[in-house]
Amino acid sequence: MIKRRISQPIRIGDIIIGGNAPIIVQSMTKTDTRNITATVKQISQLQEYGCEIVRIAIPDMEAAQALYKIKKKTKIPIIADIHFDYRLALESLTNGADGLRLNPGNISNKEHITAIVTSARERHVPIRIGINAGSIPLDSSNKLPLPQRMVIIALEQVHLLENLDFNLIKVSLKAFDVETTIDAYNLIADKIPYPLHLGITEAGPSVTGKIRSAVGIGILLQHGIGDTIRVSLTSSPVEEVITAYEILKTLNLREYGPTLVSCPTCGRCDVNLMELTDKVQDKLHNIHKPLKIAVMGCVVNGPGEAKEADVGVACGKGKGVIFRKGKVVQTLEEKDILQGLFDEIDSLA
Ligand code: SF4
Image 1 (cartoon, rainbow, N blue to C red):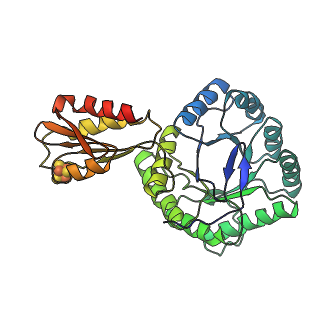
Image 2: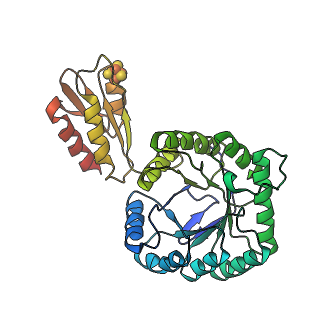
Image 3: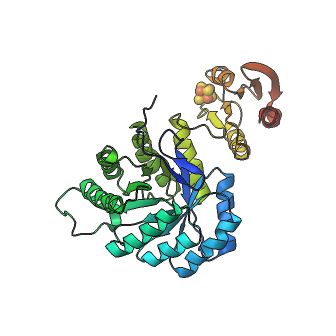
C-alpha cells in the first residue's frame, strides 16, 4: 500500500486538494478560450469522462473576459493559465477563476505578483506555481543540474508568496525528461508543505505521451508524491482523462469506472477476441461504476480470471462461458457472447 505524502489541503472551487483527499484528475482544454461555445462543450465532455478540474489558456484579455461566461455554463472548477502578463491574472480572478497557474519563468516582477496575490487572497483562490523546465530563466544558478535549478526557482516563488502572507499554494515541476521530473519532485517534496501537481510536460502524441506519463507520474505516485495529476497528450483531452484514471487505478489509488482484464490471445484462442475486447471496451466508456470485466481467450487462464471479475467470459472453440460474480450463468455461441456480456454488465451497472 502506498504511503502518501500528506500535504496542506487547499480548495479549488468545491474540490479539496491535498491532505487525505483523493488524487484529483485534471485536464486542459484545447479550444480557443475566446470561442465560448467550443470551450464550454469541451469542458462538459471532459466532465462526462471524469475530469475534476480543468485548466484553460488565457492568452489575452478577450480570453480572460470569456472566462466569465464559461464559468456560468460549466460545473467543474476552472484554473486560468497565465503567462507573461499579470493583468490577465487579475482579469481572470475578477471573472471567476477558481485557481490560477502562474509561470515564474515569465511573470517575475514583484509588484505584479503582489497585485495578483492580493486579489487571489481576497477571493480565497489558490495559485499554482507551475515550473516548466523549458521556460526557467537561463541566468538562475546555471551550473546546477536542471532539477535543482527548477526547485530553486520554485522555492523562491513559494517564499515570495509566503512573505505576502499567502499560503493557498500548489506547485508543479514539469519537464519533458522523466528522470528530471522525478528528481525535481523528490527534491522539493519534503521542503514545502503544499500540494504537488504532477505531469510530464510535452509528453508527446498518444502512445508515447501515455507511456511517458504513466512511467513518470506512476513512479512519483508510488513514492507517495502527488495530489493532482494531468496527463499531457498531443491528442484529445478526453484521452488525457482516461489515461489519468488508468494510472491511478493501476496503483489502486482511485476507483473509477470499469477495469477491463483481457488476455493478449495466442495460438490457443478459437474466437475473434480482439474484436470482442474492442467492442466491450467501447461500451465501458459509458459506465462510471467500478466494475471488473474479464475477456479471456481460452481455458488456460480464462475461467480463473473470469471468476475473479464482476462479469467475465472464458472462451473456448466458438463458444464462451459467461461468469457473473464468480458463477457460471450461461454458455453462448461466439456470435452471442458480446450481447451476453452487455446484458450482464448492464444489470450490474
Ligand atoms: S488465456 Fe488462453 S488464449 Fe489467452 S493468452 Fe492465455 S493461453 Fe492464450
